[in-house]
Amino acid sequence: MNIPISVQLYTLREFNKNDFLGTLKKVSSLGYDGVEFAGYYDLSAEDLSDNLKRLNLKPFGSHVSFENLKNNLKYEIDFNKKIGNKNIICPWAKFDSIDDWASFCKDLNFIGKKLKENGLQLFYHNHDHEFNTIDGKYIFDFIYENTDENLVKAEIDTFWVYKANVDPLKLMNKYKNRCSLIHIKDMKNDSKKSFEAIGEGIIDIESIIKYAKDIDIETLIVENDDPKPDGLKNISISIKNISKMAILKE
Image 1 (spheres, one colour):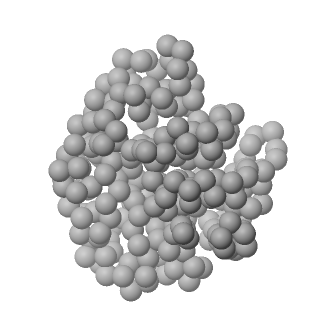
Image 2 (image 1 turned 180 degrees about the vertical axis):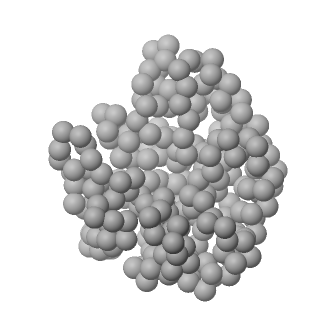
Image 3 (image 1 turned 45 degrees about the horizontal axis):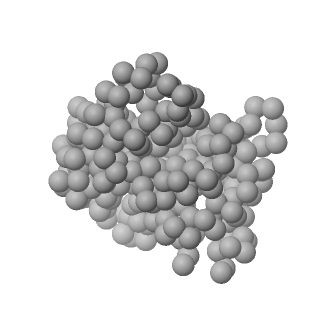
């Protein structure tokens, strides 16, 4: 099975703000199968849907802030149903106490239930701080132990997992029944563990792709939080290197 390769459009934010549709056209021309949104840049759902179809790009997800999920959920539901996107991802949360994390989990269950009632699915996207411990366990594990497995799924960002000195493959295996979206990005071999284009760094991306295929991941999502020299050049290098990987030809 060949897994669709998508782009998290946050990577291209410097281009999106000036010409969002032009950026989507460039993503399509590079050979990507789909996109994951980080904002809609004032496009209507109808216009966005029409352009996605024209460019043969599938909407695989949308990152929506926790604040917007709480305060503008109906808008997000209506918009994403119109563009044909079923996956809504909470991209970030950070709290200091276990009580605050517990409250967050209750909110995720509530939001996830509302989304599920409308044919959509909620995910949570990790960084590295979720691998700090509270009461002797990873915050990451606490989140999924305290949310309904049908209402809250995991979008595992393998870069941040690796940066936290956790094995991405073991984490993907542990949560294989709750994970259908995977973020891939590479890491420079430097003291800061900086971001790098796929295939140019030290993370074993091929092993991640192989296991993602084994567990029928819906899509692999290329992202770079701080792309160099810029987002378009970065995702161009990434898709070229991914296309050369033997695992995708099996």
